[in-house]
Image (tube, rainbow, N blue to C red; front, side):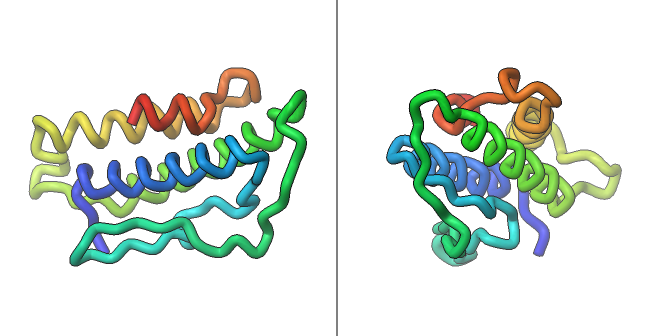
Length: 129
């Protein structure tokens, strides 16, 4: 199903909040991808699902686990971008839709940066998205 940029941004925000919640508790989902998100169209509720690979980790000095999950989130954002509705001229129609799509592209680039240190945390992503 195609999503508007605003709907895709809400999916991204919900997953970022879930990632931040898990990481604040020293838990890693270990499978953050679009196929593990559930969205109820009527209510627009979004849930991160499939915790079968989740694990606990020591947050102190082990941020690489978090940065790897952020990379997976970046791939999720790229998937979301590929599902966006576009207008007949191939754009998002400008205004808020274009801004939402730009925010998703910017976050995806930051999350998939080569350097682990350059990648944002989920808490930072929550504030940016």
